[in-house]
Image 1 (tube, one colour):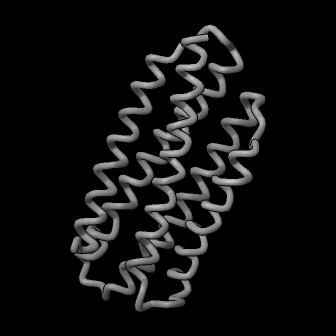
Image 2: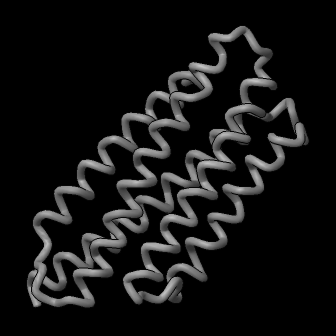
Length: 168
């Protein structure tokens, strides 16, 4: 069975790979359709942003643990940082879509992404307030996993839009 440190490192590796694949898909996609380009760019931006965010947040508990804090304190501090950084990333994503004149949500966002975001946020909020402190590590990993799943879902939509416009 993997340790939590192994899981954190694995998530960090996956997030770097995801950001790299997103950049590659963005470079390959056709750029002739202006609306498709703006949407693809915002999706690419989101995937890269979340990939970098997950890399930082997956490694953060390992750094905090080196300060000799209790495991619960490590997960609480990491969750607080994740909450703040997630709000900043969410605002940046919102501003990107709004400034490009794109809708903030569609059926996919309302059915898949927003409920997943709720699960992710609840898991780190529970940690911040030490609810279920015996499961603090699992709750933090739940946040990372759900966030990674969201990024992968957007990545698949990015591929679809990039290659649909290229084949179009």
